[in-house]
Length: 244
Image 1: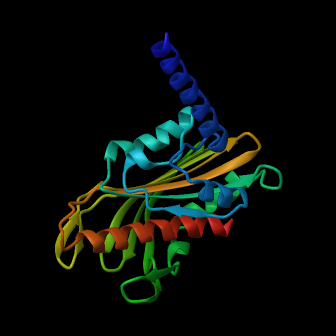
Image 2 (image 1 turned 120 degrees about the vertical axis):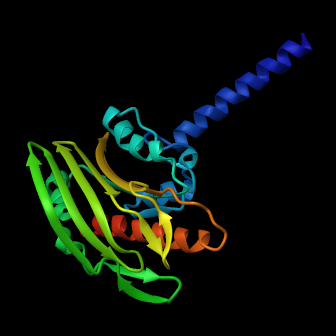
């Protein structure tokens, strides 16, 4: 009898703990998001997370479109990963989708985004050049082939696509060429991907950016790749969110 009661109370405690976890971390986020990060989001701040691994991402949603967006990065299973998140109320932000799409499709406006270099301790341009090679608009989908120039990696042959509806936006950015760091190939084609998705959750808009790079963790390149690529992905997403 004592053994039965012991396991009963253990099970009851697990249920209670589960309840409090889900009350503190409401959808669309899970327990990977800290209380401090959640508090910042509730204030409207942009938070940036060095996620490190797919298993550590904090977005958790039953929204089928959101799952399709996350699948892009899950399939990549990157070595380096970062999240950028903001919450905005739907009220006073009813047109956020139509406002965001032209920001993302204005490739020449990418030039001059300020990027803080930790290595050099000063600002550089995130992209020193940006050219549209081709663009195709079909319904609510825009497909753009662009060349983005980013030091020290040179020209990045880039595939960009944006899908929108009245309450959803999905932006994808993929490199189409191999990337080199100090003449060493560090990222193969289609191994650097970033997404931005905007969707409704109750009375809020969730603005969510996720960027990943699949690259070898060579000891003499690991830190430079992580800092260089992750900070650039975070800089771009943060710039887009703050421009709204």
